[in-house]
Image (cartoon, rainbow, N blue to C red; front, side):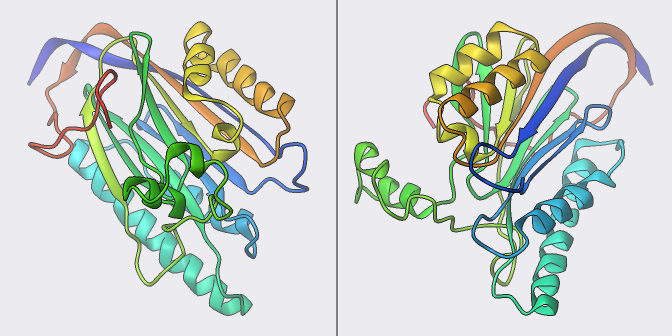
Length: 269
């Protein structure tokens, strides 16, 4: 069955830099606008072969092609990430190292809906009508202490273990992913990034730079500012801007997960 409908369009760009201090770039990203699949992965710094772990995560997702339903796209994404987890665990055993791992944040876009899957402290933001919301939450020791009221946000910036992550692909017996979803509106901008960006830029600065230019220039400006402020880590940014056009389309299932919606811009997370 076909009908005239508003079709989602996506303009996206990604950029990665090793930063001013690190000798290697352990970040990786995936940009597949035709599939509605975008990801940023950050190999765990200080552990063995972080670049191998993040490449394994992105490589597993890269093999996913366009799907007939949002549910199938989500299922394949979860399946591939779980497979990557077991592959990384196996590779760590073969190398005789204690831990190999990578954070991951994934954005799926399908038929006016989005979903995010993540493990670790790489983030996804939604920028809508000038308001920015972090739609993921960090899987870190310090974030958990703030949530429990043990630390204030001010204390968190000085906490000596603030970079310790509590979830990652390849870390632990099994992979635990968090999930949010919601509606996409024309003009929405999604920003995926590694913590090399958020260590140097506040959310309002990210919003200002991401909204003022197209995705390619926005990525360059965001990375450049992180480098100007020290570039203490690898920095990766992916910006996806959503538009719409009238088109004859097939009617497809519309929801990633019936009854569940994620935070939207202007709402508290």
